[in-house]
Image (cartoon, rainbow, N blue to C red; front, top):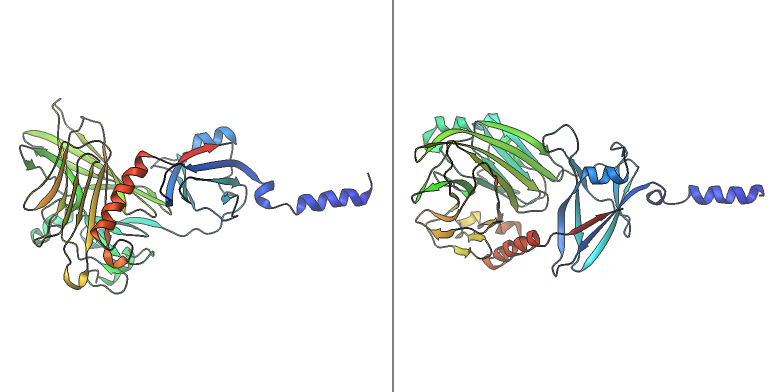
Length: 378
C-alpha cells in the first residue's frame, strides 16, 4: 500500500462530519397524526439509552437533526433524584412525518433557558414559574398574614415575550403594569383561580390554606418541575394532606399538575378543578366527553383578554358553572395521584386572539395527549 493511498484514507476519515464519526445513538421520532407538532418536548427514559450505549459522557453530549444538521435543544431530567431519569428533547414535525436524530459525543452549545421557576421570599413566599409563552404563581403561607390580599388559586402572569421575565418583574416591583413584555392583571381572590384543585363534597369546595413547603425537582432549560406541600386541613370531618407536583414545558401554554391527597379512612374524595368567572360575559367551553374546560374572559379594558383552559386525562363526573367559577368535578382514588393540565394565554401575545383559536388549541392539546409521538432507538 503506497503512502499516497494511506494519506488519502486518513484525510477522508478526518474530513467526515463529526455527527457521522461520533454518533452514539440514533433516535427516530414519528408523527402519525394529521396535525403538525411544534416545539414539543418529548421524554426518553435514560436507561433505554444506556442499554444501547453504556457510559454515555454527559459532559460531551449533543443531539443533531441528521437531515438538517441543526442542534436539538435537550435537558437531562432528574425528577429530584441524583441520577438522570430522562432525556428531554424539543422537536417539531410536520403531520405524517418522521425525523431522525443522533446523539453525538461532542460539546453542546449554550442552550437558551425556556422554563424557569423559583421561591420568592421577598414577596410573601410566592412560588413563581414561567416558560417562553406564559407565567404563573402560587401563594405561600406568609400571604395569610394579609387577609385583604389572601388568595387560594393559581395566578397567571401574561407575557408577550419569549424571555424569562419573573425575576425582572419582582425586582422592579411593578408587575401590575405592562412595561412592554406583559403584566399581572389576573384576579384570583378566594377562588381556584386559573385551574387550581381542591376536595369537593356536598356541593362545597374545601380549600386548603396556602402551601407551606416547596421543592424544585428540575429547573429548565426545557422543563421546570416543582412540588408544593400543604398542611393537613379538615375536609368534612376528615384530615387531608395534599402534595402538588407541577411541570411546565417549553412551548406549552399548559402545566401538568399531579395532585396527591392522603387521608386516614377508605372513603372516596371527589375533587374539583376551577376557573374564576368574571362579572361581564365571557365565552365558555364545557366538553365533558373530551374532558376539556375552557374560558375566554371578557376584555379587561387596555389589559386585554386572558384565555384559561383545563384538559383532563380521565373523564370527569360533571362540569358546571356557578356564580363564581367554572368547575370540573372528578372522582379520585386514595393515595393515587390525580393528573390534569391547566394553563392560560393572552390575546396581546398575538398567538391566540379569539375564543375559537384558544378552544381549538385545547382540543388539539388533548388530541396530542391521546396520540403521542412515536420514538424508537438504535
